Amino acid sequence: MRGIRIVLGLLALAASAAAFAAPPFAPAAAGERAVYRGATLIDGTGGAPRPDMAVITNGERIEAVLPVARLTPAMTQGARIVDVSGRYLLPGLIDSHQHRATPPVRRAAEARMRRDLYSGITAARIMADDLRLIAELARESRAGEIAGPDLAFAALVAGRSFFNDPRVGAVSAGYVPGEAPWAQAIDARTDLPLAIARARGTGAAAVKIYADLPPDLVRRIAAEAHRQGLRVWAHAMVFPTPPDQVIAAGPDVISHTCYLAYQLSDHPPQTYGQRFAVDPAPFAHGDNAVLAGLYRQMRERGILLDATLTVYAEIERRATPQRPPHCTLDLAARMTAQAHRAGVLISAGTDVDTPLAEPYPSLFGEMELLVARAGFTALDAIGAATRIGAMAMGQGQERGAIATGYLADMVVLERDPVADIANMRSVLMVVKRGHRLSRADYRPADIEGLDDE
Image (cartoon, rainbow, N blue to C red; front, side, top):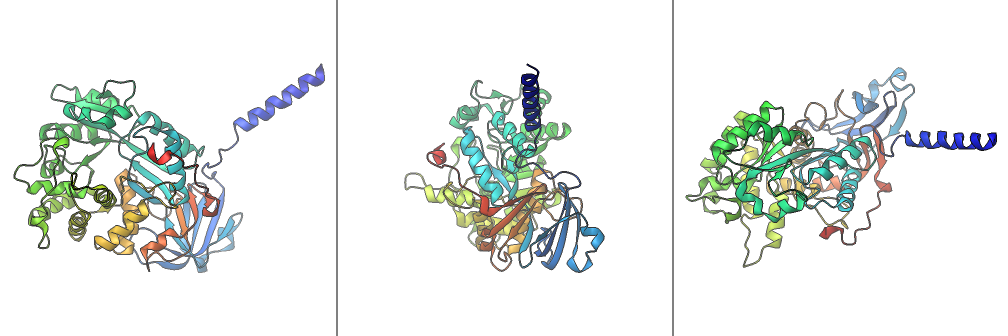
């Protein structure tokens, strides 16, 4: 009998130890040090690449960044040496416009998050979804229970007329459309402090101001969200609120370059559902003066632009004679190029994704479009997907660059992305919060049916 009790006790201890074992993708523990030695460093700040550099990490943070020639034995004592000679070391990438739960399908979301991480995307901005699933995925990814980027997500607010959109039902199961805390209908009678507090209670980092709201409500929502410590992410036109009034409301980031073109419409759409094709004529002869004014206001107010060229390429691809695109990729790229020349900070966001059979997600295509179509240099595009992406998340003080004190989020490439931005697709290793992953270990999910979910 005593032997049985001993065996049961040992089994209980083993189960307890297993329960407290580090998750498979957990951040590196404090005191766990590594030296990434010999790579050409592209630090995300826009500075020139620096050859033969060393980055020392301690737990989930960067301890030091210095030339290899300045390393001392004391610096490397007890640290794991990771030889990345001849490689290219960049900050972890950030996709600043994703949807991972519209509709909420866990298998599909996890498959895309896993591919993101093994491709070097260590953080992402989620632009409103079913936040019940998103919050759980964010917790699991942050703890290292699943492979995926860190997520910063938004709760959506819009006018009541928007809530006939079928996507609302897809993210609000169990609620009357417009009443879920993460997808709220707002009108002049809404108790805004309560509405924003409900949004904040979902764990959201921001409120996304989507559509069908007049200028006074856009301003009031933005002010209340900021008062309660939330970021404000908005469409560049909120229908009927035109771009100049959206900008005047003071959001932190606006999305979708082509929506800015509605500023020139004599009779702009009054609701999201009434969107029509923007007129390309005012943009046919170089920089547009009205856009120049909008971009000047954005630059002066520190408002970032989430351009989403990828979504315009996808809209164009899906267009039919019966359903022409509301904006072409060419026009979106030219408007984005003007914003870039005007000094507006532009993040790399996608809003759509490649099929799961593809080895890399759409952020890589977005970076390539910024270079090929919008006048970015390769270093500009890298900055858009690192430093400026972190700023869009509201986390520019701790991620998006390789610098002392920042999170140890990094990606190692085989080939030089400055020589050719397509070389971003040569990932060898990813480091997220100090935890190393080899791209060679990536195995795509069983993709049958997931791209349709």
